[in-house]
Length: 303
Image (cartoon, rainbow, N blue to C red; front, side, top):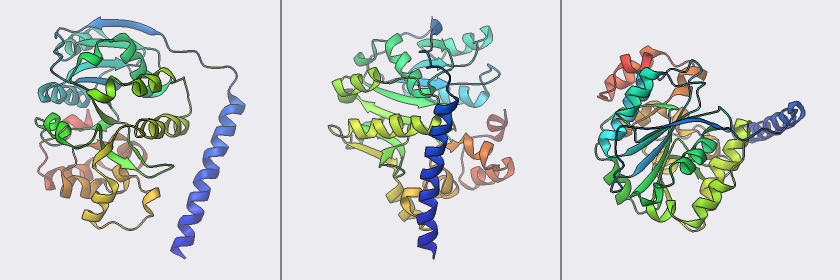
């Protein structure tokens, strides 16, 4: 009976997706234009090509940069990343520009269209020196963290026997790395496959289409030549935690396993969507952070 339930669940999800696609196409009155870059400012930091460069996408409906974002950027800088900050908020205020300049080598503000993949495309175009860097990280502000020390993260990523290393993976639609954290070694970031993938990115405004075409597509297209790996893979993590409630191709590891991931496996991130969509309380998160001995404070999270 349980097997039958999950079978119908998959069919329902597929039908919901195609209904949403149809509704989106019906309501779409004109083709979307490519977002323009409103401004690009140099940061106060000088690029160091021995360091990997991080293209960090961010958005806030009130055009403010929250404390949790500054914390993440600071930890990336301390870990050894040069940072290109790509904002799709309506504006960047002078106070934020000043703070960002002390953390970044470049700050870009663009129109809010095309989600993060188009943001990364703009970042790669606006900072053409990225192939000179040691490696490249694609990241965004969809997570709280890092919840634990990040100081050795570059060494850990570089030492993995893979060309592209993500934090987590998924079997939904097709096996792929989840796109909130994608570390690409130099062999990848300088490859024709990488360049062609981002050259072909267009503006899509339907989120699940972005997931299928670009998040899944990134792993599909690049894995033909390069080895990909997740530090907290679904296979290993679910086995260690002993989770077997859902079929693996329906599990979102960052949602379904968020508590044991943090408390047992010291996973360094918490998806913001958990708080927004699943109504996880601050008290519940606080208890998990205390149990896991995280150095991430509730004051950073609730800002």
